[in-house]
Amino acid sequence: MTEPQIPETRPERFEAGIERAIFAGRWLMAPFYIGLMLGLAALMVVFVRDLVAFIIKVPTAKEADVILGVLTLIDLSLAANLVIMVVFSGWENFVSKMEHITARDRPEWMGTIDFSALKLKLLASIVAISAIHLLKAFMNVGAMSDREMMWLVGIHVVFVTSGVLLALQDRLTGHSH
Image (cartoon, rainbow, N blue to C red):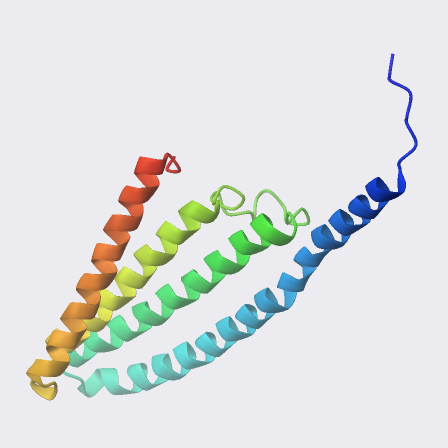
């Protein structure tokens, strides 16, 4: 047997209206995710441009130039993966579940990444991108000053340290899976 419904008072109706408006406000995030997808399209244009330039240069390129070209493509790919991860998990966590996607097409991680895991994955991607930039700099060490190289190493160390500290904080607070 259910309890009889007590009519809502005016303050309760007001509160319920505010809560509905706040909850509907999550849709204000949609333009951000659409903008990120446009950014992803821009990354794809740059990737294709760099890929075409790379393929043209490969027949006469030195080994180091081929490695640098491949690292550039990997760097762009990691940045694109980062955008996809933010859009998918952000949409699912903050806007709405993606229910119109078939189970076959749905990535395994989708719907399982909470904000804490997203932060760790983002920082891990940033560390990987930083490592690629550092490797590219090491392979072209003659073109950089010692000062520039130290800045790159220092920035990379800061990213790595931040990642380790964030993961440690996450573990200590019990947010890790």
